[in-house]
Image (cartoon, rainbow, N blue to C red; front, side, top):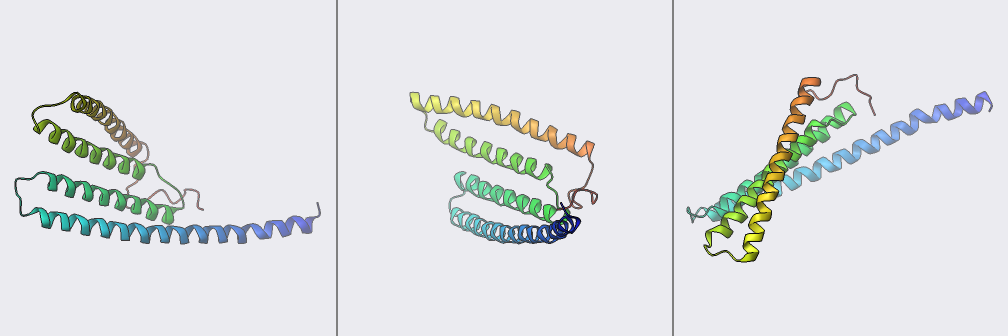
Length: 176
């Protein structure tokens, strides 16, 4: 291979890398805009549900639905934060994904609790209702173990690399 050909190939690398980085940042911006729009829609839906549920103070269903929707918003905001940290540093970090998983697990526990409480309030439980209740208890146990694993993982990540979530990863991380 001629040295002129090698130099020409090397000259294209920074240009092509710049194009891909700009495309990646453009996709991150589009993702951020869609996440924000989705969060706003879900918050408005939670507010409408809460407003319509104010008429019946004894119903717990409205409270669970509003909390469920607000936890979805919290997950979306945490994903948005992950996108922001990725754009700033050029590297992905594990902790925000663990936090989203933690929020999703807690959200699922709330949904299971609501479903099983409605099933057990009816008094007489059929075989199918008993089977659903049993499966729900198994799922709650699995979710409890999963939550413990994620909390332990977050704790270990913070002990090994005590970088605050506000600053993002270390600036010496590989930049894209």
